[in-house]
Length: 285
Image (cartoon, rainbow, N blue to C red):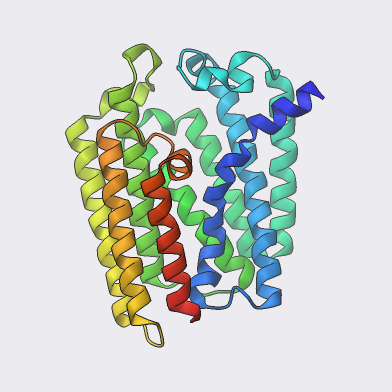
């Protein structure tokens, strides 16, 4: 029972909120609440959650020595020694295999997306995490692949504007994470790649990517038809406020974990709820 509990902690169910991006394509298309689409979307969500859990275990196994020196990550099961590395990797292989298998039931595209996600993250753990900028792109790609799986699993077409907005905000979140790590940890607990970054570069990356995402979102609702104009304006304002809040948190070194901050910060949580409600209302009302 103790080991099962440690495995459950290691696969980080709290982080599965990020996998809600799998639902974004059918939600934006206005088809999510059709029974068949709803069932396929939930299935895709759990498939990606299994794949993400596989990645977490692999990363923790490779990074256990560095994580052991980190003020927060040292409490993770593998870094603390509560979960044996061998068992962690065995569970990781099982979860990865199941995710790929079930993804192919949704079609070739869905199976290839999950296979690509797992391959990218294995490459990241082995090599890419030491290469500045490229590793940022690899981190950001995970968000785009989540959205792509939702589209593939539900046969929802992904527009160029949709993919552009997802990509920009993915890079923004990755830049916020790295900037927070750069300024909030001492050298002994920092990632090796952080030595290749400067605060100025990461701030500029955050500014450019967030501006791109906001302008892309603006372009999306300007060209959309049959939507509630008032609600879409509210969603745009709430997105802007949330972006500015998270940017400020990153500058203070408090944006290393976006999921945790959304759950804990009252302002960010309120803005997120306002954005979700107004966005869904603009599409479905």
